[in-house]
Length: 285
View 1: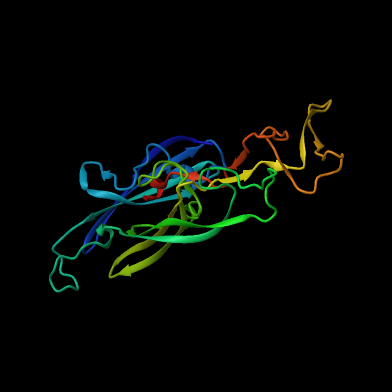
View 2: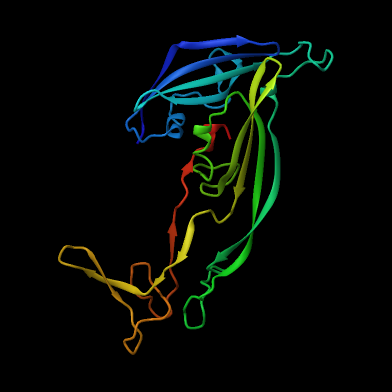
């Protein structure tokens, strides 16, 4: 799934001047190669102006809104909103320069979040198992402390069909110094604001950071092991039994290849990627 081409629709250039701010828009058509491509894929296309990119020939304007709309199965229309701040108008402040809300810097705050979750290894990376090399029936839990970044900002447009795709998503690229897979968008919401004749959105985003990442790791264990394949080349498994040939009452450790772990060997973990990774820059984070 990918973008085939991006074309600017020159008839879509537009602009409006309000009491304290000037706005301009550009419209693009984006063609994808699959009907399954969503708006996040479209907005990440090369050739579309990114957040804060300047208007051609006028650096006072910058991108503060990006909205995608499906026109047909594989064709999308993307509207890019540019905003420029102007000064000197008489506002409610009694003559002081009235700043465009869209030009106000984001409000950023940090806090921590505690959660109690199951763990399968100790601080040294050793598997949490009993003296016989078996996992405990009841999982061991521990308190996690994640850093939480809260960003409150004003934007020109808010598209829920785009932002919903980012809830629960992990960073595909480095984000604020965190490597891919470490930052998770836990919450993102928008509220429409009317200020005189000016309309904009207030967006609040909450990003959680976990140093070990958000992929799920499970200790490789079970009651069966690999027994090769059958005549149709399908995998065959046999039940693991004890020294008396009886079925096991608790799972045994496996080696990552479907076989019983050799005595004294290090336990093996299986990693499962359950959350999508997306580029946060597509929505201006």
